[in-house]
Length: 413
Image (cartoon, rainbow, N blue to C red; front, side, top):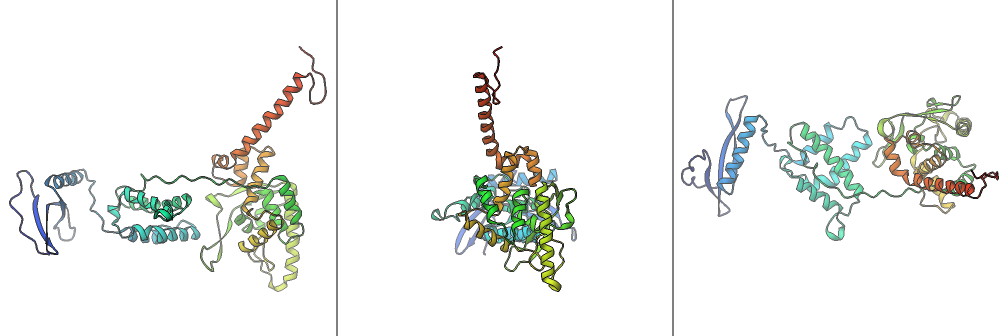
């Protein structure tokens, strides 16, 4: 690219600021440029200089002044040439050692499907909050309006991955600040839970009598355990004599075609101890007898896994098997939309309606906080408050009429 000589001397007091004119593709471009020494090469001792350009002399002077101030304060950092794509690949490879394999795979999918195609070619150091905000808006905007049409929850998940990656870049001093911090995400409206009512639960229990997974379904309903926690439950974590159960792990499957099963800590990485109702203890005893029968039928083909719920040869019971069997039952009952996870919601609602306090329900469910449990099941407590008010009204009316609920006369004092 041919260049013309600098046009004249620098203005007084402007130091190394010069006006430059270059020719590119036959067209002349004029701009202002300054050079600042930002450090020294540790090997050669030579100066490391940075070129600062702008459309006006004032713009360059301001940029130069800012760099000089940062150099004096020791806060200046040489801009990195690494791209968003290069940093994400580095982060996905080197900084996810403490997350579950399924989570790491999910992070990679989010990055490769959404972030890299849209922002991957940008210089990481030059990434702005405005660019990230527009990216999120584009993901959420409907396809009819030129967006991707993703749900608010999916956009939040993408943001979660991107924010973690950028936060690590900031810790590594590759970024000065995290540009995703200032972004606004679309509001998520929590879907209403769909627990079974008492009549539906009774119909469900009648329908599964004699079913291959009868005890699995019943225990799910009466403990509120997650499906993965039930499928990963081992006999060594159950004390039938004392009626307790420790949730220490869950069965997971790699989120890819042909993915294998593996065990991981429960959600929130926190184990919990459940005190079982006597009827639930009996269900576990019956499951043990059923499993003993399966062991005899399988003979030498039996695999001693130590799991409570197994396939006919003692191995892990697949999610797909449980899903298909459960959905078939619900279809027969005319409740095809009910999910296995709704048994957990049903347990929570029944527990609250039976008088359990919110803290006990939270701990039994394994939620991180009672506030989270309240957020999901607060409507149940509101219904209970209305029912309580109705009962109090009946009592008040009984006093007003001179009668208690037991029929005893109340004297007027």
